[in-house]
Image 1 (tube, rainbow, N blue to C red):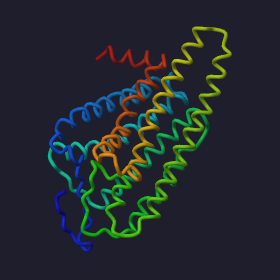
Image 2 (cartoon, rainbow, N blue to C red; image 1 turned 120 degrees about the vertical axis):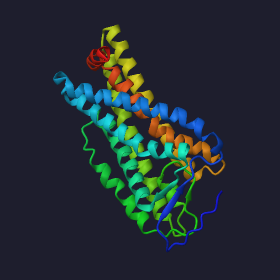
Image 3 (tube, rainbow, N blue to C red; image 1 turned 135 degrees about the vertical axis):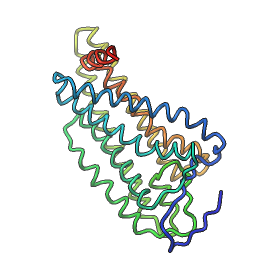
Image 4 (spheres, one colour; image 1 turned 180 degrees about the horizontal axis):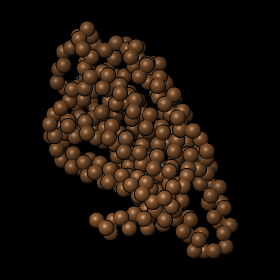
Length: 287
């Protein structure tokens, strides 16, 4: 690892090192990353455009889809432009304020995204995400940072920045771990209960065709939630306990959990809705 000699009295600046061990492949790795990012932007902006244009879609379900699309755009945009600058141009510097701003919005949007998925099944305010994320930058601000300010990551992931500190980080790590498990566990439990009740109701339907259609939709939704949840939890756990796992594996997964949902959500939640699919088809054929 390259040396970065900077005293604690200097300007707070970090170096994002990309994906350690795969530096030679950064250009190649940037190709699927950029493709995923472009697809996610096109899909989510298409959902927003169609719902905005069609008054018949101004319903609670489609407004929630728009909120989901906005969080998807925000999550991937918080990470990918900077990551691609690292891969393409070697622009690795990021200020302390920039670092805190980046991970605050990543975590706030991630929790909001999770809350919206729950809201699609239960009525819950998503603004609580901001209150849960707010302690992260406040706790990080109190930490001293000494000579090592090289972050082995493509973005300012919270625990990766915390590990750069030469102070006591137990509070930061404990709070991060508790929030990750409480929110992920609570959301997955509520979503599981919701879809359990939906599937139970669907099985009572006499129509075999309606039965199959509803089950296919539920299966697709649950698959996306499980994939997202498993990747997220694996990323969080390996960052804290996975000492034997290669750094590039963790970093790739940490990027995927911010890229995969924005790509899949417009397909699963948008295209699966016949009303929205028909409206999207109308505008697509015009192009």
